[in-house]
Image (cartoon, rainbow, N blue to C red; front, side, top):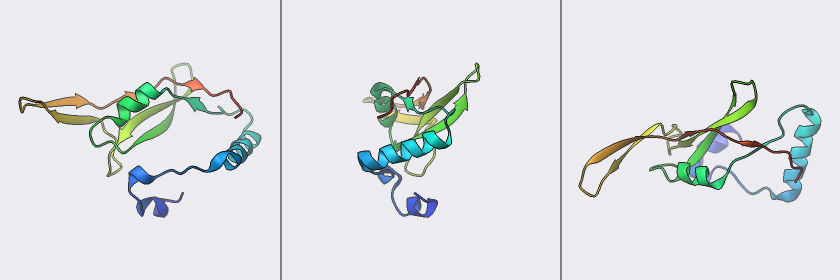
Length: 116
């Protein structure tokens, strides 16, 4: 999806089901062009649910990074409707107090070794 196409939608709408056949084709194309690259990542539902549960979160931003051992990983954060990372948010408690929390900046993945 091009940047212009993204700008015409709300960020919460970015992404689409492309179907198994197209997915397999795209994965195979990448693996043939990059045989030594990390094939993919697995991230568990619990952390994804925690990120998406942050107030104002409309999606998740995934960034490639390198671990201290020079292994490729992902760092991922919640994103608000303006496309900004949620690094801090406020919550009004039942007593009317405002509490500030750090946004979730997550890591920990399993390298995806599956082939569909």
